[in-house]
Length: 423
Image 1 (cartoon, one colour):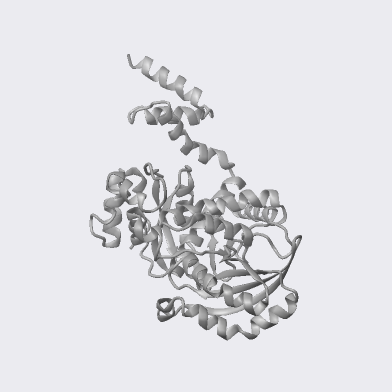
Image 2: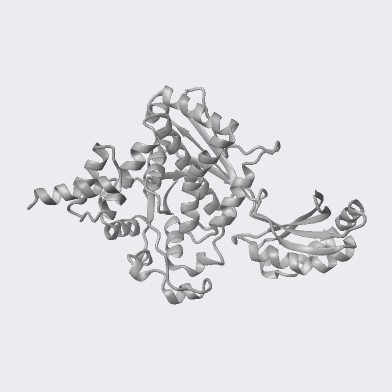
């Protein structure tokens, strides 16, 4: 596998799929499901959600140039936003010169919460539940013997007393290694099964029993060194550090900073059929520090050689079994392209894509500003919306960019002028 595909962007979508198949030694038809005519059918969609009336297409691109833990990877990204795939690919090219991305992750442990209300002695109930730890863990494991057989299962139980405006609650956390699943169904089923017994031990009434998307026991990490000269020089590297520092200190900047990270992450999560909302909620909750302040998920600093070092750590509850990942034909093709064998590997690749996307955005902000590159790509959408044909597209796009007026009304005028001149 070589993720450095020179000229890839100049090929047609069909030719690109052929190149991907050749790179990974896949069957030539491996990526046929990425063509709308052969992808998710209405009949398949009708089995996935309710009240289906059709399917909604999202462009799926491939980020190139990625080296992760010394292995080249081609990363599928499903997104409607121009510049995301190109920016991630460019950042990966810069990181490639210094060895690419290094990643790691914790075990795939998800948590479910069981809320007990109307408890007379919350602190006493907490200790009673902890005393019954082994009984409860065994009962939970009995709900999913296949998971236990695969090496997963309950790893621990913790109990908290939570103060609220409506009273004090006893909240039991069930921590479960879900292996290669996202894990929501597994932990929810266990929580449901334990509810009655937990209520008996706590001497209260069980209300909620459901997973938490604050998946802080299931973290993925990525880091990379970006050569200062490749970025544009030491001053650019220093300014990226300043941009990152503002995001760490200021929640107004952090919100946009983290959105840039999620541009890359959500695109890969969606492409592989995983739950974008679960990943996003976990990421943003993780961005709230111990002091209750929302801050940047990533960090940038310079090393002794003056090069930029970027790091990113966040929850990554994704899976390879169950859900749309197995049902959606395009998601299966995307996972096949990645070649990952475990949910942890998938989580690490996704995190690397998020760091790459973040670096690309900060580099643009620290140099030419975000709009120049973004609007250059956005100009294609505007030109197509105005009715430009394939032959007219290059001229209209170049004019919109040169005039610095990437707007629908200007596209209409440019297209009218072009057609009038061709009479």
